[in-house]
Length: 192
Image (cartoon, rainbow, N blue to C red; front, side):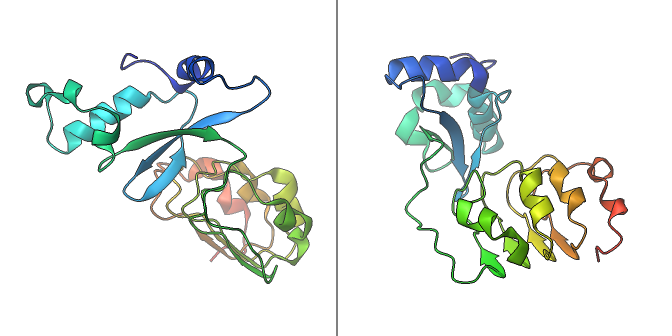
């Protein structure tokens, strides 16, 4: 794998080497600093690892080539797993008004939450590798006032957020968002 190999180029060869059936969807995740996120199809995993190593002071003279797989897990780890798999934390919801799903490695809104969207007042999704929130879910959240999307490694605000008319608080802290103008959040006059 070269430094310029993208996730889209890597996935077919991983599927072939691991004998993954074509009907199953597997995704590549990166885990670093105790957080996990889904890698985008245009991201370059080898280049990402190289940049992290260089950031921590490694260079070619240190023998970067010798550092492989499990030897890097203290710094960064790539994980290839089924998109249907949810890690060991069981999702249980006691109240649909205040839902806390922080740090559960979710890539999608759970069906139970989706079915009760109109009851949701506060939704905490921070620390999940989710990059988008479905528009139909957001439009069903007619009571949503507080949405927390921090520590998700997002580069842009999910487009669907602009359609939450009742939203008063939006937490986007600790993300990689460079520009809020394209999020059209100024259309929502209720935001504090």
